Amino acid sequence: GAGVSQTPSNKVTEKGKYVELRCDPISGHTALYWYRQSLGQGPEFLIYFQGTGAADDSGLPNDRFFAVRPEGSVSTLKIQRTERGDSAVYLCASSLERQETQYFGPGTRLLVL
Amino acid sequence: QKEVEQDPGPLSVPEGAIVSLNCTYSNSAFQYFMWYRQYSRKGPELLMYTYSSGNKEDGRFTAQVDKSSKYISLFIRDSQPSDSATYLCATGRAAGNKLTFGGGTRVLVKP
Image (cartoon, rainbow over all chains, first blue to last red; front, side, top):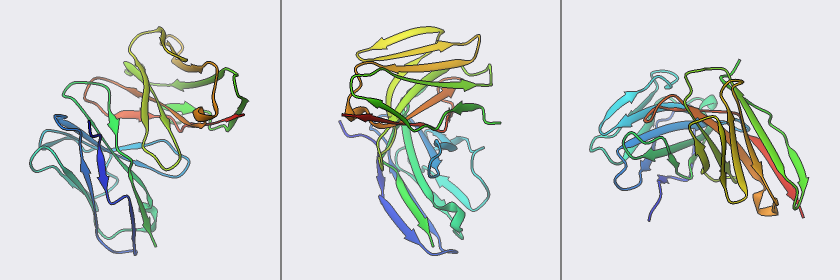
């Protein structure tokens, strides 16, 4: 079946601009996670949704970052006033409720100039 | 100090050799352990997961966990050039919680 999909695959923006990154989880997966991966590093947790609500947003670096999942399926990660340090690969993962195994999408490569 | 430490490599081995990868973790609350493989410019792909101390085998892959020493390993037998990738260890406290990753080890299997 279809895996986790993320759009766009690449995004180039200018410092100070607003960006939205989209994640479409595996059908039937109620849990959705966002991670950020910098070059040469492992993924770092940002936020976790169970259904429509954010169950854990402790990884969001500051209030420029926000994520929503209004219908419990697709999620959007929103970054305001982008900075060059936001450049990274943003990964989305999904899992069945109360299951440990998380399945990752291909990521969105964000470059802030 | 990071909660999960992993040697970044690169680790270069000849085709057919055994690849040995390992991670250490510091938090006793971690209850389950995973290995992901990540090819260049792709998302991580789940290889193995386990809960308990001991070995778990799946084809050419063996995952090993020693909770007493907070040490996890992955062995790849009969390595192939297609195994060339970055290998990420990850740990979690409970189902539905975030994963904490090591920094990844880059592996190169030379034909």
